[in-house]
Image (cartoon, rainbow, N blue to C red; front, side, top):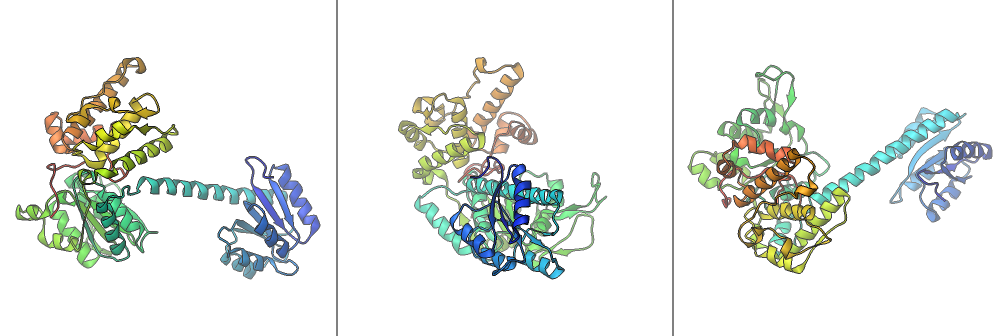
Length: 476
């Protein structure tokens, strides 16, 4: 039986004294130990027993040797970490064991400190891999596209068609509809899936810094450039770069992006040299780029380079049948991330949500769901718990004075609620909201970051910038 909080280790060696010595050392440290005197016996144990966390495998075994056992194990769906042991170690054997997937290699005679150090290193790496896999699963869940509406099924069909290609994609749709999720889905199904996915929010980066962010800069290129910086295009080399809100990019920067698309070259700010990059470009906008072209704010040649494959991310009002699934998804996400019990929405609450106009699309829905989970008592959220937003106007949810300890905490909670109410009332349009509340747009961005307001991209829980342009604008 596996010792609590300790790893299970299989020792495979034909020398009984070696097995006994290793067992004594490992059991004293609290590890659970299983023994096998041959390669065949080890493979039989692996076929019928719980997989060990680690195998100490001798190379020189009667019958099937250690390398043969390692090769046989590679055919299984899960292979534990293996440390090879040999009394006649050669460089060739060590190289061959490494090629077959062995994590480490030890020579006899074995010392207690050497054995324990190697085992701890392997198990520490094993723990890191498990944590990484867990984080990866949670991240993938956050970026999941939720919904079974025909519009979403059509969108998925288009994603699957274009993902394996290197075609440039332009994702169109209102703010909050999930354009980043579409971009991530394309990358995840592409041949570049194991390479970087780099996102750039063109609307949130000041114009004087956007070129440095995209292309990098040399040390001393401008005031404040105290060291050389690698740009986003170089960071995405081999993978995908997602240019969100590309309609907000300056004409000067547009020309440099066009150069990357046409020639695959980037030039750092302050440098006369260019370097090659292999990057797939996916862009997104909630603007009508044809109108931007006519107004002289967007390059027509860049538009044609970006618009190779246009995709449309549908607004929530056109797929309200997906609201119950989205609400349930956001409830699960919040419970998982905050280690809390999941709440559910009653039918009357879901019916009320379905009647909302959702100017901010799924982004607005997600924020409302999270806020209700936090501020509503009980396991079930009912219609009476919903704010006025569901009936054509949202009131600010004032914090309960009894639950707030300090004046500063009360003020911050109230300010956060005020900002959320104004953003929702303006369809998550930052410029319009900043004008209405009489504060600079840059200050509003800082407030969003200060209060941890998660601005999501629509179809799921992906953090992304709020919109900066006129509400309701659509792509060409």
